Amino acid sequence: MVGKQNKIAIVGAGTIGLSFAALHLTKDPACAVTIFDTRPDLGEYVQQNLPGYLTDADHESCMKRLWFASKLGEAVKDAAIVQEQGPEKLDFKTAIWPQIEQYAPEDALLWSSTSGIPASQQSRDMKDRSRLVVVHPYNPPHIMPLLEVVPSPETSQAVVDQTLEYWRTLERTPVVLKKECTGFVANRLAFALFREACSLVAQGVVNVKDLDEIVQSSMGPRWTVAGPFKSYHAGGGEGGLTSFMEKIGGTVQGCWEASDEDVRSGNISVGEQWQAEVCRQTDEAYGVVDTADRDTKTRKVLDAVRGT
Ligand SMILES: NC(=O)c1ccc[n+]([C@@H]2O[C@H](COP(=O)([O-])OP(=O)(O)OC[C@H]3O[C@@H](n4cnc5c(N)ncnc54)[C@H](O)[C@@H]3O)[C@@H](O)[C@H]2O)c1
Ligand SMILES: *[C@@H]1O[C@H](CO)[C@@H](O)[C@H](O)[C@H]1NC(C)=O
Image (cartoon, rainbow, N blue to C red; front, side, top):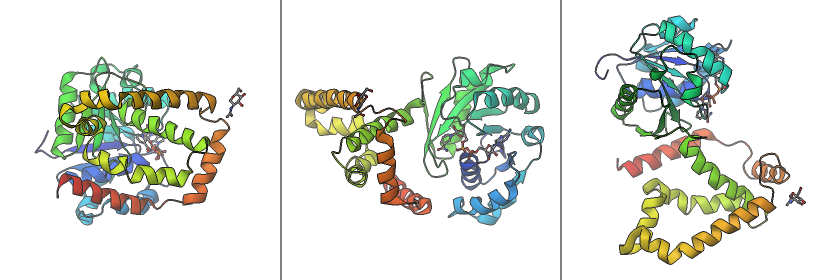
């Protein structure tokens, strides 16, 4: 697959699809991308949003390799890769794969960007369920290197291997999960921290802005350099994580127990009373966030960590 011209079909080009289109076009100079999306304002939407994603790329070359299809079959018929990021609805996903399977070449890779509907459910009505794999991005994928590759028990190893090869060639960071699980791993981790953040604000320990300040000036920068295991392994000195757990384990356990108790007593569930106040503080602190500024800074951080 690497070396020859990759034809990539993007099915659903909203927030994620357009970002992926930009990623393929800029990182793989030989590829051609065809978009299929049912939104009536597609041309205008792409015109307005894609240029912002193509920073430090040859804009003209990218646009020359971008095509639109008015029918699904036309988009996928000679694709090496079909990447789906339509609505997050089980009915949509289960209905579209048998159609894609019907029109796409037999050896095309079939990827879903879903945030939570596992391949084992999406592939229900396919003839060959071994072909589908979840490739879950971290938004926005034209910037964030991570791709969680989540095979179903039916997905073939060859499909997983080719998927990894493609992303490694593009210098991305694909990671395979050994089993399907709710939310996959990145969101499970992020939302665990988010729950604790909501709970601490709800209890009045800190306000929204100070909590963000704490994250940005401590574990935020640390975790771009080393994940939690490596960080605490380093924090334990010569004895590593083993020694860290011996020394700090009591504090860790104390925090875990307090966290469980606070979450329970504060009723920290989605839609409960605490939520309105946390959202109000966040609106007041930030208004509408400038995502272009966020993306520029994130790129710089990633470049710095990569040592370029
Ligand atoms: N937004 C995120 O942060 C994020 C992160 C990771 C994964 N995802 C996943 O990506 C997928 C899309 O999310 P999004 O945020 O880009 O949503 P979105 O609403 O921005 O985009 C969905 C697109 O699908 C199009 N669409 C609707 N019906 C279609 C059809 N029948 N055929 C083709 N296209 C159709 C819509 O017109 C729209 O442009 C979801 O499965 C979601 O779980 C989203
Ligand atoms: C949590 O829910 C319980 C039971 O409904 C209620 O008595 C309690 O006041 C709630 N606590 C908070 C902090 O909202």
